[in-house]
Image (tube, rainbow, N blue to C red; front, side, top):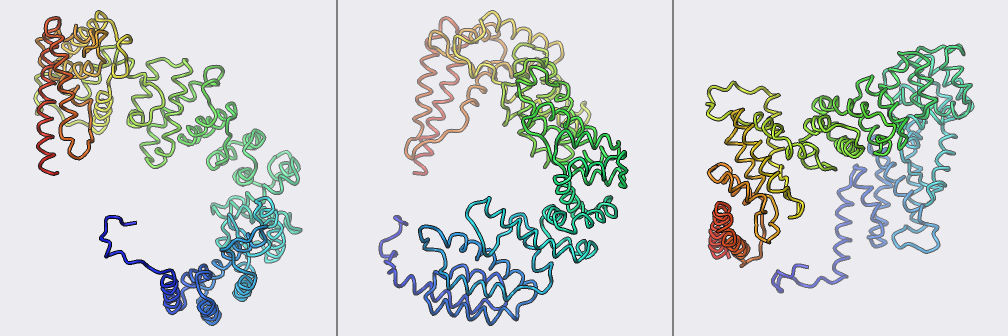
Length: 591
């Protein structure tokens, strides 16, 4: 494995020596196990690694130690044994033997140890069964449906026993149960379930304890499945004589399926019930656009803005938005989402994909104006810079509306000739807008993905450039506008004659040959486009020499027809030639 190491440092290890070391390690771990359940579970999980005498020592050690374990360690050991037995019994009766599965004698001995650790307290003994994924030690199956059916049967038997403890005792120990909804379902299914649920609903329906509310929801879910409308008439609908307040009714409705009937019932029960329901519900539709819009509106009404965005992303597809979808609802949710994301950045990051998905669909549905799309893209540009799923409208507008470009420049730069001391300290909002403007302009490469035939005509590109410079001059941003315009032009492709830059770009440069800011921006922009590079050891500046040669060839080809452009291309050739020399020196120095 370590082919770089000296041969004499890699002595061969015999298999017999390896297993002797494993046995020695097992004995040392056994001596250190003491009264720590985690260590004993680790040993019991690796019995197949030990020789019979070491394995027997492990069993004798744990059988002597378990009676002295503290309560918490005893509980942890029993949990570890249960999971271990579940795993091995699950595969013990397969058609083909599996080498890692313990034999029947080992499993039986582990089962006896597990049973010896059984607590006297009923809740301590069975609370594990109401975990989200309980692992039963026996009667296991590899088929999920069979496993779940066995779990439900055992839960029903245990729930019948737990019900006799009474509701106060169960609520006092409710923290012992991980999956309280499953507990509520099972309790409502037992013979005493109706009586117990009635006590729970009437006396604790308005509780603020989340674990008790989950128990209520589990009971309500089971009884509604069993009784249907009769359950709603008895407990929810006022015309049926419901004894519960609107808040308590909301707690019950949260356990019912997230569908139109449940939402109708919540709203019919009253405004307090509806508001309480929508503040807490997590059940949302998927790929049901009409339902999605209804849920989104309700979530927005209780200021769950980011959850509303999540629901819209799951349901409002492009085809729906292009036909009968509520465009204004999506736009409103996204606008409100900016403030909500800033208030809770962690949750905002969770719905980042949803935001970019909705923006893409709004763009594709062709029903949103460029102005509205630009505003949304501007608000979320920090996100879209790296996660955009569509060609941003804001860049299309930059490429055809000079005023938009100058507006961004005004957010980022002081006017020409303005002194720093004369400018007031920017507010936090101004800093955020300046940051957005920088990111937009930094990523603006309008011609980078275009072929020669797709470039604007020389006339149209020249008119655009003149308009940018004129507008920028009027507002006092001529110098920075020239710089950014030069950088944008640098991203264009070669022309139809095979020489770089494109003919349209050459016309602009020749017409503004005296503008030093444009020329400097053009050279800097081209160098920056290249980005980082990697190279083989000893390669030196070969890449840069090849580039310098290309630029010299283009410089010579343009010398007569576009002299100003030829001069800039020559500057690039010189820059890459210098880089080649520097790379050669660095390569010799380090290699």
